[in-house]
Length: 485
Image 1 (cartoon, rainbow, N blue to C red):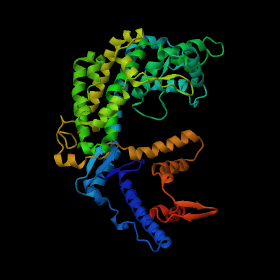
Image 2: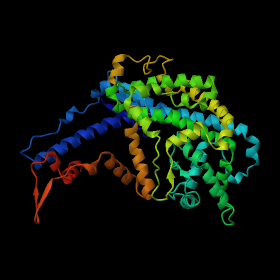
Image 3: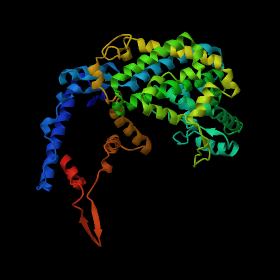
C-alpha cells in the first residue's frame, strides 16, 4: 500500500502541487540518467531499471495521503486527492492529533493551577520566573539536570557523581530532552521529574547553602517548583497519563504499518479513538478512578488481546525482574518503568501519597479538556470518532476501505524524520550549515552508507573483483554520483 506524506513548507496549496509535479519530473530525469550511466558501464548486462513514464500520481488511487492536522495541510491534501482521482485514503497524522489534545490539556491545567495558587505565586519573586506550565518546568529541569552540558548554568554533570557518592542505592531516571517544540513534552518529561524529585531536592538544598551558588536562579526556580505539592500532584498525574494513554497510543500509531497480518491498518485508529473516548467518559463521571491502576492500565486491553506484538511490548516495558541495570558512566541504578508505575498508582513517599486528592481534581480538569478538544468540530479529531459517523471513523468507514488501509502508515514519521534528522545534526555539530545537515539526514535515512559495494578479494598486492556476487552490488558510488550530477 502506497502512502504520500505531505511536508508543509509554508507555501500556498496552489504552489505545493506544481512543486510536487516538478519533483516527480526530476525523479524521471534521474532515473533516465542512471539508466544511461549503467548501460554505458555495463553494456552486456540487462537493463534492470523500470521505465520513467511509470512514475505517476495516478497510481495512488488505491493508496493514501497523510498530512498534519493544520488547515493548510488539509487543503493541500484535498487538492492532491483531486489530482490523483479515485478515492485515495486521506488522513491526519495520529501523533499530531494526540499532541493537540495534550496541548489543550496542559493549557487547562495551567489555568487551573494559576487559580489554585494565585496567592502563593504572588509571593514568589518575579526574578525566579516560576510558572505552572509543566512544559516550562520540563525545560528548566532539562537545563539543570541533563548531563549533555548544553546549558552553561546547568549542573547535571555535578549531580551525577554526587548521586553516586551520597546515594549509591538511589535510582536515577533519564532526564527527557526538552529541546524543540512538542506538545507531548509535558507527559514525556513527567516520569523523570516525579521519580527524581527527592534526590534532586537534596542535591539543590546542599548546593544552595554554598555562598557562590545561592544566586543560581535556575536552581532556585527548580527548588521552588519541586517543593510545591501542587506541582508534585501535577507531575504524578502526567506520569499516569504517560503510562496509561500516551505509551499505548504512540505504539499503536507508530506500529500500524507492521500489523497488516492482524488485519490492522490506518482506519483502525478510529476504533482506538472510539475506545479511548468511552474511557474518558468514565473518568469524567468518576474522577477517583484516575488513581485505580487496574482501570487506567487496562483502557486499551482490547488491543493487547488482539495484537500479540503489542502484548509483547507491554510485557517487556513493565517486566519485573531482580536484575539491576547500572549506568557505566555514573554507576547510578537505572529506573525501570514498572517502578514508575508502582510509585504513580501506589506511592510509598509521604508527599506523593498526600497529593492524591489534588491529583483527582487536576485529573478531572485534564480529561474534560481532552474530551472537549476531541469533540470540537473545528478540530481534525472529530472526523475519526464513531459518534459523528463520518467517513474516517470506524463506524462510518466502509469495509473495503478498512481492508485497503491494512499495513498503511498512520503517522507522518517519514516526512517528519527528515526534519528531526536535520535538527539532530545541527544540535550535535553546532555551526554546521542547514543544507549540509539536511544532506546528512537524507543520506542516513536512505541508508546510502549501508549499500553494498564491489565484492573484493585480495591476492597479494592485487585486488580481484568477485563477479559471482550480485551484479547490482557492483555499481560504484562514482556511478551513482555521476547519474545525479
